[in-house]
Length: 164
Image (cartoon, rainbow, N blue to C red; front, side, top):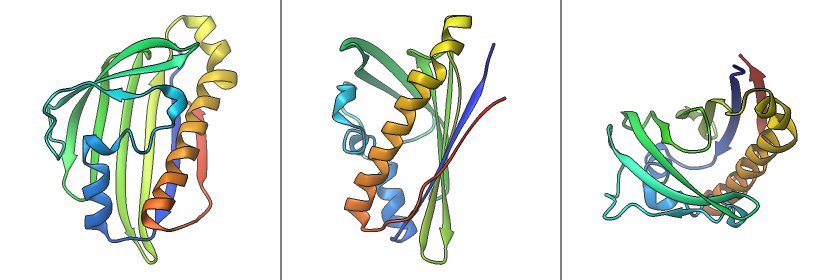
């Protein structure tokens, strides 16, 4: 089984509280997700803030406009520092997404580390680079652009994907 890690770092020109307030609200996820995914949060009565144990339900259309159902659980939250979401139902065999915020001289470094594994064995490994990794980069490029619009900062991204 191949396991991959996707790494993205972005410097945001804002204060820690404002960035945390934005990224820890499940309602804001749609704002920073590209339209081509057809992403919809379908959970009802979501609170404004995430909390450990919270289950969030989504629909998206990642491939050939076919609807996919996804459930993530917020497994860890350290206020103003990090949170982790893990897929419980969805397209990946494993999905563990760490969202970290680190104060920096010129703002806040937001670091995402996604550890994931694909289904379908050999076929999953074949489609990793041309489809899955390419799509992850598009999603995080879009998110970077949207966060720059919201918080007004531009800095080069740091990408790194490795097979564990």
